[in-house]
Length: 502
Image 1 (cartoon, one colour):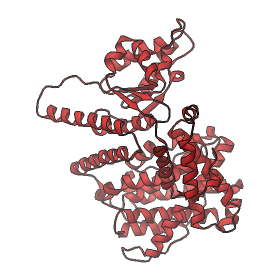
Image 2 (cartoon, one colour; image 1 turned 90 degrees about the horizontal axis):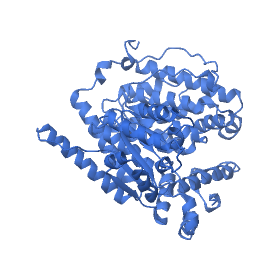
Image 3 (spheres, one colour; image 1 turned 45 degrees about the vertical axis):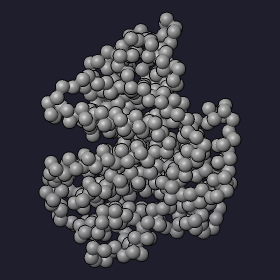
Image 4 (tube, one colour; image 1 turned 120 degrees about the vertical axis):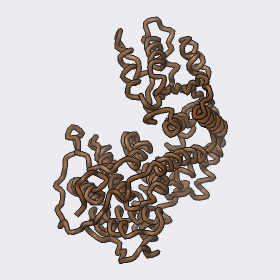
């Protein structure tokens, strides 16, 4: 039996508990009627679909990590109650099974969609708990392969990109974000979280099964050496830089961030060699229109700063005027301090920061700025602040307090996306979930973006507008596909011009 010493020595046991928890969530959906329509189309129970989904993910992980080893094979076979794929013996997964698993993963994650739909309708958080338990299983599986550091980050990023567009409730997208997924896969596997009764998510009865599947695992096989830890750190930084450079457009932004990274690297080399260092501020000003990637870049910078040793956590806390300014005397300073404490170890990203500098003498924005300047000085070793907004307004903001100008000496301008770049962003969004645009859809969207009037372009909101178009297209496609008696993979993957609504 698996030794009960610590989480690292209980991979299968932890995975099994998370699996049983997923069964209970499926029971909720089944009992409340959410599965009824899906069952009439798929002709499978929700539990069978869950098992097929989990086995498909685990098979895909094994393939990503190279040849399947015996521990991986046992894990895949033993975890789910129903055996949707017969792996047999040996370290090679049959090609037919790999293709079948890959094909299944290309389909929309229907159970996750139903969790999200339930959350939207009942204001619950089932999606978060479902996704958390699923990631715990994937984390446990990754420890079956000694080479996990070399493939797990890129695999999880790919997995996350495929499922996130199918979440219906925007709140779920805020909670189940890429940073959350990354943290889950780089920390020790966890037991399933207890559901918060205040969030209106009841626990269904967990089906019981015979406990006859056991895997012997020695946690010592997976303890990292200092060399492996350093390799993991380098791999993470390389992965973040790869993600940065893969973004559509933003050429000047990439150059600026690249130069900043090089400056920090050389600074550290000088420090190691005992050479004197000049003071350096890591705070930045991002200027540009909404939807030009400022928040995305801020998140990447926070993680890059962590890998370079500038920040201890690398988290990103987003806020705006409403999160910093209160309506009563003395409350604003407390509010700012609370947000700053939450951001310690990472980046505090203040969107539309210029709204803090109001000329009204009775406004508390000035108090927020003064408190922020002091906090930046008090926590200069483990806090970075990025302020963002329109170019002209940000100049007025910095002039509102002399302490701001001296602390923000790095300005990065985010240009509006061109029509071609917006089209490429749409294609990229679709490609991440194994979808594509028909030729007619491509022409229609290109014409729409090219001929958009200046005022319409401003309202459209760059990449935010494209995401709205894509999400609307996915919904419209689903409404069209559900009427087909037996939709093919091509049907499920194609967005036509009829799905595009502007």
